[in-house]
Length: 114
Image 1 (cartoon, helix red, strand yellow):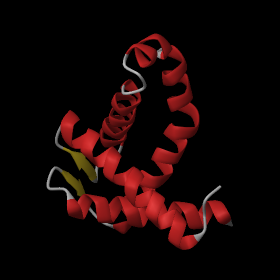
Image 2: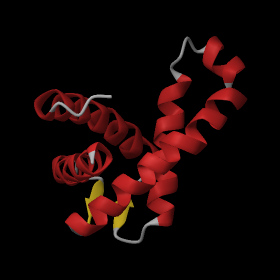
Image 3: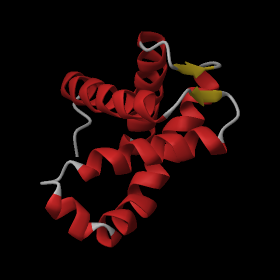
């Protein structure tokens, strides 16, 4: 049940974040829920592999390369879902930072923090 609530909250945050940034577009709440599911899958399975493969670069950049990994995940999600559009790398980077901040606030308000 907690997973369903977290996906619903993430879908809402995806929609609000797209509304706040002109370089990101989501066609509706249904698409935002699909984006939330794909992001959950990517963060659970793909992100740890990417982090493991890029440990030397992450160490050299003092962890800032993790922001690039987050932006790449957003861009790959854009590639997979037709109703979700991100205009470029920099918008994906800003959107990933905004999603993180909004999720932090939403998790605090709803109590869905793991």
